Length: 144
Image (tube, rainbow, N blue to C red; front, side, top):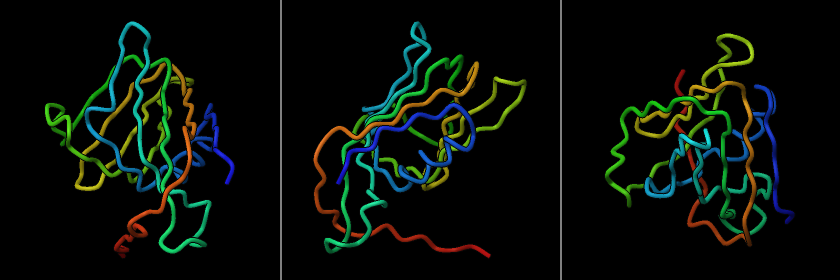
């Protein structure tokens, strides 16, 4: 399976990254914001949806993502002091406020969120290595 390397400069691009990172697991201690560089980044073990279910219960891949031109970060419902805490990423969305600036919203299972105030949308996601067998396929309850 080919490693992914994706760039998002608009909402449609970000939807592709969001689809590929849905159900990624992230250690709280492996994400951070560097104000001087205006960059928010994290490492994750993403579920490789594009691989299908060919090998049992699916695959996970180590990946990284970073957002540039980040002016502020707001965290809600996440204990940043729990460095070994695990988050499950549900979606990444972008809402335009004053073109080209807006807000990137990272939504996690359990209701936690991270909001990134950005000058403009610029995100990069890249796989970092080999795949391994997942313990199970993520499942979601559908709400009507």
